[in-house]
Length: 145
Image 1 (tube, rainbow, N blue to C red):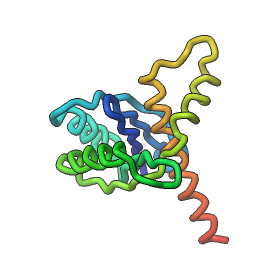
Image 2: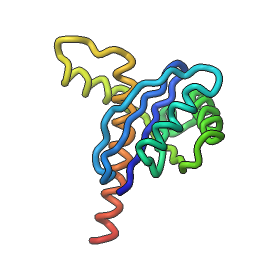
Image 3: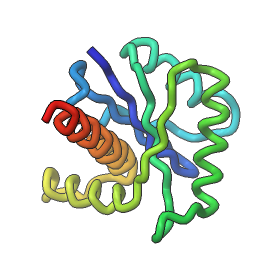
């Protein structure tokens, strides 16, 4: 049983998603405030411990053409800080278009009310994680087939 955690790291908030115990399906989990100091690092360390997370997938906000912009540097700096509080391996994952897909998903499930921005951050993390899990499943099928 392998559980994965995904992070959508923004300037103000961190969307968090988690997989099921089989590592097949992702679901939004929480939105944490990104503030100076160790607060969010400690919250994530507690989630990793409690949920027995084997790997953290971090959305990397690449620009068109795969180029790294200033948000990539900010995300990587956050992960360096997080690494001081956890030992769990981290994998970066191209998150281009995850926010747009998260908005589509949220709109489909809540047509009456516009989803709050906070909700979208967690849904975006789930989109990132599901993309990663789907790729793992595809690679596994290729190895077997």
